[in-house]
Structures are given as structure tokens and as C-alpha cells.
Length: 486
Image 1 (cartoon, rainbow, N blue to C red):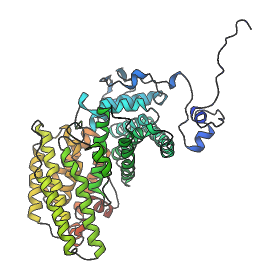
Image 2 (image 1 turned 90 degrees about the horizontal axis):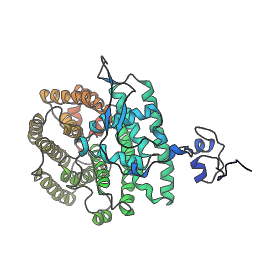
Image 3 (image 1 turned 60 degrees about the vertical axis):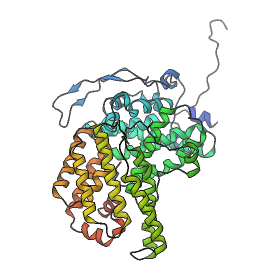
Image 4 (image 1 turned 90 degrees about the vertical axis):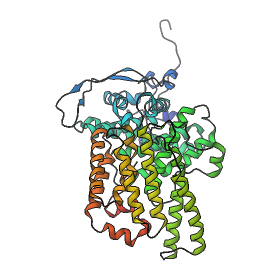
């Protein structure tokens, strides 16, 4: 018929139902099938398309934000923030104005408040947005959820942002469930990388919101098999900067979890994988979380494994000393680990802040190892290590970006020192860090330390249960909480 447009008939139904070859009832925004299967319901349209050029962009983002004065905690950004340059926001995940605000807040504050590096040297600023735009249904919602939680910590007066943050977290979890199912079924080998990144990001989300129930550990445990899949797939060999970022994020999350919990180590990959692909972290690592101490983090899984085996040997035998043969082997292993940590030196080109932070980790790892290895650690040696760490800390400026990586070592020294001045110094440092950064676990750490210091039975606990003397998890659980030190 003349004048009638001729074209291909458009099929109805959402994208997940089409992919699963299921009939869609057409209900929007979420159809019955997606609601029943906990899937991220999406619909075809021009807004669903992400330009290929946007996927590979890593340009710096400049944001102009107007502020409202006289805010109770800090300047409160209005919703007139405009993204003036940077990756496109064409994905439907960021159609909502509040979602766009959270995307902008990521570049304004969140990315820098969780990293020891700023600007274009910060992989949270460059590499993670590339992954978010490449995987807008899973990585992007996790980025927006983290930005939203952080925004609410900094500016708690906006309930709309809180609601949107939880909405994006739910989106990420739904997409994660769907992708895990496809990955396990072997129908989509390309899902290993976004699954790993999202899982690690969820650990950081729980940390940022001040999780007190140990939820971050579940994500950390799930990361290891996903890492093995990423390395074994061979799909990402040409994306060096992206993989370097993911490897450092993995190393930091799993190693700090290893040092906190009492279970087996999470940080090491299977031996055959490591021998094939080499060290996960090296001098190529961006440094946004490990600083210059990447070689120390190589040793963390070995230290954690050693401490767990020694603790289990003592508990299984039901006595304070292990058998002589086991004691000899453990003694040799202890000496080798101690030598490896004690001989570490910062790289020659490391800045003073990074070098001092690395030294703080070095003293903390030695104290952790020495207290775990013996039933009666030398209190003077531990005291000396604390003294050295506090001197190093005094040489790191209060607002130095590297301070964001020191939650675990400072918490360890705070839990073992009886020096009132040291306690006050660490507490003041943590409080200032929260005021600057707005990361929720800092407040939970402060609350935990206050309870720990007020409880006069903690000295007795360490004397009667020496195998738990370095376990921050056992101490937090004793006070009815299970917090993140990431």
C-alpha cells in the first residue's frame, strides 16, 4: 500500500526473555519472568547501545559541581552537577539523574578516596570506568553502588541517593547471579572478568558502608576461583593495564582478608596457575592499594597459611606445644618467612610516603608472624616493632593519600599496644581519615578499638589463648561484631 512504511517487524519482549527464548509478558519496568528469576530486566531501544568508542576511553573526567554552603559535615553537592568531558552515559543504568550524579561523584571524590594515587595515575579513575562501560549490567551498577554508599557517608541528608545506591547494589547482585549461572554452565567464557571485578567491588562496598557482619569475606572467598578462570581463559592477554588493576585489587582484598580471618589463605592462586602466568602483582602494578610494597604482599598468603597450620596443629593436639618434628619444620618455615619480610627494602624510586607506609606494613607483618609463631612472644620485641611503626607513621602526613591503605597495620598495632599515647594517636588518625575520606569501616574500626581498650579482660584473653593473639577477627567477634579492615 502506497505511503506505508516498510520495515522489519519488531519483536516484543525484554532482552533476557529473548536470550532465554521465553515468552515475555511485556510488563515494565520488570517483567514477571525476570522478577521470578531475579534477572536484570532490560528492553531494546537506542538507549541500550553503548558506543564502541566509549568502551575503550580512559580520558580524564572534569566535573563542574556547584555547592551549597553551611552544610553540617561538608559542602553538599547539588544535583546540577554536569559531566563536561568523559565516557558517555548512554547506558540505561545511568538514565536516572541521581545515577548520573553518582557517576559524577565517582570521579569527583570516591575514586580518589579509596586510592593511594590520584588523577590519571589512579586506576580506579581510569581502568575501572572502562570496565564499567564494557559491562554496564554488572560492573557499572557495582561502581554506582559504591559511589552511592560513599556519597551517603559524606552527605547523609539525601534519602533519594541512598535509595538509588541500594537499587544499584540490587542490580549488581541480580546480574551477578545471572552471570554466575551462565559462567558455571560454560555458555559465556567472557564473563569471568566482570564477575571477578564485581565480586571484588562488592567487598569494597561492604567496607565502605561499615559492614559489621563479615559480609565482605564471602565476596573475597568467591574471588579466587574467578581469578583462576580469568587467568586460564587467555582472553585478556592484550589488556595489560586493565588486568594489572584487577590483579592489584584482588591481591589487596584477599591478602588483608587473609590477615584478618582465621581460615585458610585466599590470596594465593593454584600453583599451576601461578607458574604459568607468573606473579599476580609486580612493579607493573598501579600501586593504588599496595603502594610500593607489592613484594610484601607476595608473602602474605604464605604467612597466613603458616599461621593457620600452626594454630590448627596446636588445637588438634590439645596442648600448648606441637610435636618436635612438626615444631622443627614449622621453625624452619618461620625463619624463612621472617627473613624474607625483614630483608625487604622499598624501591629506590619510591616516594617517602610510600616507603614509610611500606615499612609500616613490614613491621606489622613481622609482629603478626612473631606473635603467631610462638606461645610466648617476646613482649619487648613486639613493643619495639610498635615503636618503630609509630615513628614511621609520624613521618606520613595526616592527609597523605597512602594513608588509605593502612587500616589493617594500624588496627593491629592499636590492638596490641598498651601505650596510651599510641592509642590516642592512632584513634585521632582514624578519625581524621574518616572526616577526609568518608569510608564507613573507619568508624567501625574506631568503635571496635574503643571497646577493646575499655575491656580489661583483653590482656587475659591474649595470655590464655595465645593462638588467637594476632587474629583481629577473633577480637572483633568477642565484642559481637565482624568488621572489614580493607
